Image: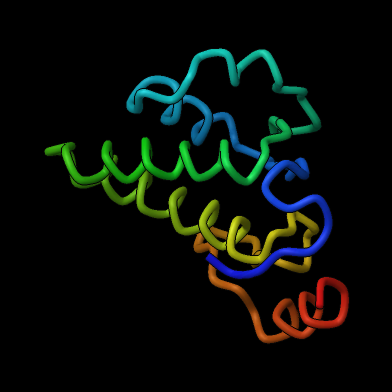
Length: 121
């Protein structure tokens, strides 16, 4: 994992989930159901704060579910969710410029890379 500024692994990272992503996380992984208590509805998204360590755990649950599901569509959705969350953990930032929006690709754009370097060292 890359170096982070600030409080490190205990600094909260705000993560927005679609209703479908959250449903997948709760119904198809072994993620802690306690995480649902953190959700706040904001428009069409659900937002929750996690530490980088908790996001690492969630990534493990998502990867395990993706690797063990026989359903191709679910595997693709889990893979897209993993990529998006992994990009947030690697950037150490959840601001909108750090992760590209759309289809949950999670790919970090060149503009976001410059932003991360300027803002986060």
